[in-house]
Amino acid sequence: GIPVTDLFAVMARRARGAVGLVALALLACAWSGITSIAAMSWDDTESIAAASIAAGSSPFLGQTARRAVTEARASNQPQGSGFELLIVGGGELGARVAAAWRAAHPEALVVAVTRTRGRHADLAAAGITPAVWEDLAEGTQFANVVLCAPPNDQYAQLGRDTVARWRGPGYGGMVFTSSGGGFAEGDGGWVTEDSPVRNYRQLLDVEGVVRGAGGVALRLAGLYDRARGPHAVWLANGVVEGRRDAWVNLVHYDDASAAVVAALRAPEVAGHVLLAAGAASTRGEICQAAAPVLGRPMPSFGTAGDLGRRYDCTKTRELLGWEPRYREFAEACAVWR
Image (cartoon, rainbow, N blue to C red):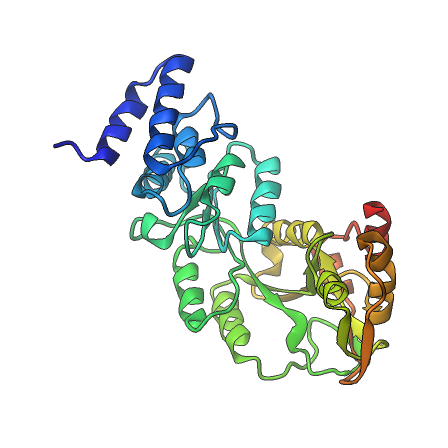
């Protein structure tokens, strides 16, 4: 009458050496239908379980996350250590922020909260503790917190819930990755961190909650890498609805994650609105740079719409000491060739 999840826990504690670890891994794989154990760690039975049990297939992964968070918080993460990090939103940007933080603080506890367990095996294989909200014990707080989940119907509440997981400015930083898409400028002019915005209430509400608690709202330009971003969509569709000469602001995923980490480490920016982007390019310039790399023909362009805006991030760069690796979208394309 022992629940299978309890059996796994007992075996994890008793497993010794490679043989014991492989036996535990194979049992986990057999139960959840997994056939590959290539991503498993030989040094940590918790990592083996997390990497081998597919997302959503087992409550064991959730128990692993809860136990890992509890044990790490109780033992080697003393209050005020300043290195533990909670990321709410473990998508592409969240995963890169976690990787950048772990590179700087290899021993730090990094927890990524996702809506589902769909990416948990990948996160665990990267040394990140994956979790859903239910895995975090009530009252658990972290020195550093990043909210980078996409907007939803309960976004303001998500902002409040995330702030409640932060210890506060005296312990570390908090960053909300907002968007620069709400700026009112549409005639091709320049905008800064302080420029007027339209009524994009969802993001502004969360910005207010985070800044009010002493955190930072980091408004990001459009995120991209080789396979993701507006260039990939436009070239795949073959049609761009907007004007060819309209300005678009972009920032590479890695540059955006570096800006997030820099903001976490800069207590002097508490309460600020910051802005992260490379140099603006027109839609035509973006497609012209990416088309040869992706092997696609140039798309057709529309004639409607405004001219967009161009970001001036001078203030943010000076405050954070941050510079994007890819100042121009075309520079990234040159690397991809």
